[in-house]
Length: 186
Image (cartoon, rainbow, N blue to C red; front, top):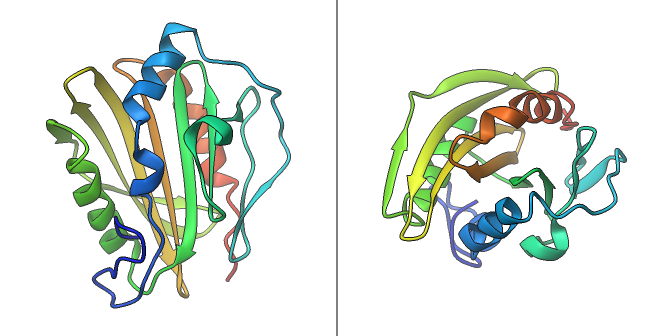
């Protein structure tokens, strides 16, 4: 899941792009924050990401796909100024390597990026994943975020959550619920 369409990751396989969904995210987040989060119809129906992976939004989250510009292996949800993007695609490495690739891509999106130490968590009942919390500063805003990556049997899954500074912890329980409820084939 390297940045750049058709880019080849460190695993030697072409993979999809998380970076594409990040274009314009600062402006989108600021608009959400200014309007208290644009509310669309909330749904708790599972959303397929491809490769057998599905994610179910937590209660109160609505689709952000129209505004976020997701692709066939991605989806985005929003709630109260926060956005959570989920991506699933082929990936031959492990979750930690996937997280490192995504952090490199993420670092290029900010003027300054500060991360907390990585933590190992379990998502989708039994999938080991790596999580990092971060704060990014761009010319127009300070954003808090969470990046989670896991991989199993040729499938990589990434969640990127972003919110205006100080707001991410308000939706942390929901993010944890969505990560726990992921369905990733074995």
